[in-house]
Image 1 (cartoon, rainbow, N blue to C red):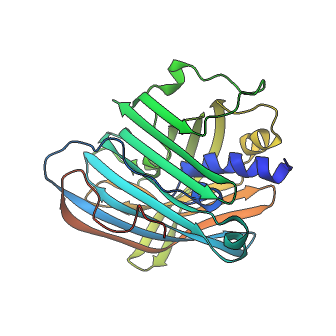
Image 2 (spheres, one colour):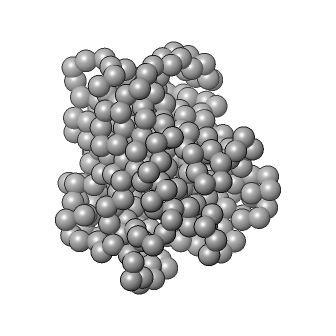
Image 3 (cartoon, rainbow, N blue to C red):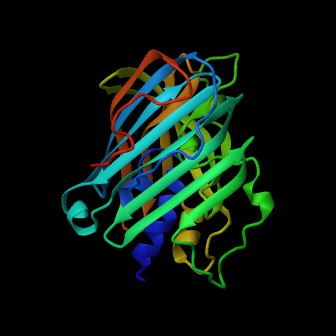
Amino acid sequence: MPTTSDEARQGRRFLQSLTAGWHFVLAATVATTLIGAAAGAVRADSLDVQYDLSLAGLPIGTAAMGGTVSPGNYKVDVRARMTGLAGLLTGGKGAGTSSGTTSGMRVVPSAYALTSTNSNGTYTVRMALSSGSVAAVDINPPLDEKVDRVPLLDTHKRNVVDPVGALLMPVARPGPLLDPASCNRTIPVFDGAGRFDVTLTYVGTEKVDIQGYRGPVLVCAARYNPIAGHRTGRKATQFMADNTDMSTWLAPVENARMLVPVKISVRTMIGTTVIEATRFATGRSTASGAAPKGDAGNPN
């Protein structure tokens, strides 16, 4: 396979952990939830974020994130579609979903599911978790065995966050949501096949003016650290691990005390990928652990 294909796969894993975008830009997804988070009715924020995606300045797709979030629970769906020439060449579209609880600055998922469809076929992941540790995972088609793949151990599946849940960044009380310290965190991501860390550090504060939100956002530099499940022989793995030109911009969801990405910029071997929100809407709702009805699970 060409180098750009290898790099795309690695970039896909990294960006899953930051926003609804890159995994869905390149692989796009359709999913159903394995296990709904059991919870009583609580006051929660509804979330509706729409994104445009571009590569090297050219539009390549759209994505969306929606659901309900509260200081103790979340249920989030993401969906995306490649458009224009990229859509014609790959047919990429899909969605994913995650549900669970939050504790302090941690997301504690209970269920994750993802399906990506493109011209090469369909790829699905279904994962159940207990207290943030993987209880069961199913990948179809299964991964090929490769001599350069770093083995996954049971320890790599403990205290982890799935790629969709990793888009939500809770902020512990007390203190303001947009305190610079809210940016600083390491997100332990497991996507069913690989384990990696995404480390965010505060670099500044900017202002945005998008539909639904006008105000300050935190700007965080990001680093990618592969731990297990990746292939050491891929140039893309080292490229992403060495990459210092990655950042995310985080906007507040006040009542839920969470930060959500409104922009991501990542340099790749074939240009800079930008995922940027065009709409950021939140509102109060009464939730029971389920996302609002809509087409988040239907990319068609």
